Image 1 (cartoon, one colour):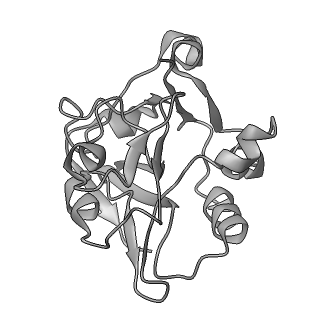
Image 2 (cartoon, one colour; image 1 turned 135 degrees about the vertical axis):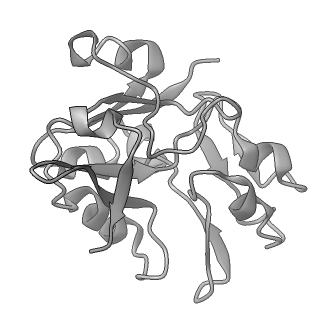
Image 3 (cartoon, helix red, strand yellow; image 1 turned 180 degrees about the vertical axis):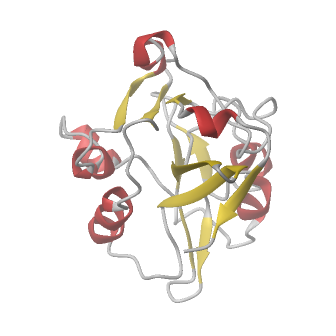
Length: 192
């Protein structure tokens, strides 16, 4: 089985949220859920303060907790390694929401559905990129097979950051070229 994932060049990201807006528009979702979201952080202390952004979505983990804990199989891994959700099989128990350390599966009260990033499967099936990838004006996002993504970033690619949950259990399919500030252990989430 191949394993797809996202590459995020954090050094190029300006925090504009174009990826987030494009995702909301493509999936016609309300403000109560976000299948891709951008969070800002700061680290350091005056006069040496660092600010960075993190564009998050489902990490299509190699060992997804949402799949392992779903009682019906509604959350499942596809042959390409993406983690998908089947609305017709879902019983709405929200176990996946509580299981995912990244907050990817989200419950929409308005639709009475679990929603999550499927990396724009319909677009990918047609040979296109996920909409977030093409929407980024800085080209900070890429999507593809994990071995190819690991070659990006001039060898400065990591799989996790201090601002993210421990990755040892789920092994997220995410590769990041980090900003220096993002590697600092002491950080504060910025409320925008």
